[in-house]
Length: 66
Image 1 (tube, rainbow, N blue to C red):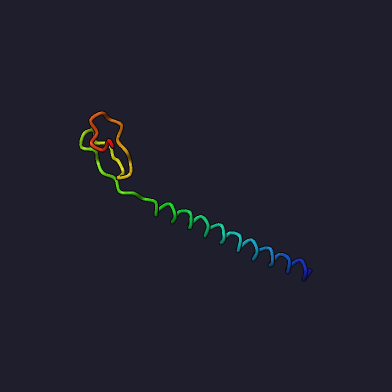
Image 2 (cartoon, rainbow, N blue to C red):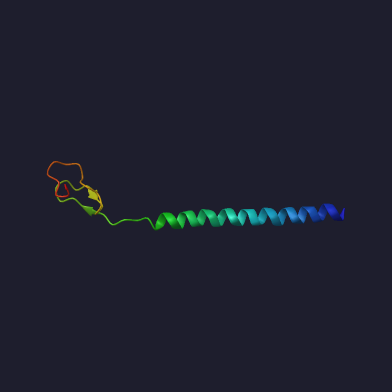
């Protein structure tokens, strides 16, 4: 009976560490996604939001055309 209780305790501790690791990994992924935010500006011609690295908004009279 002592061995069954010992195995159960070890299993609960192992499962607890597994849950904590999964939670930490999900939080790390969420934090990484927050860091990937870029500033955008509105195109004065059509109002489409573009990033500074974006080539153009797809319109003919776009000032962002390179």
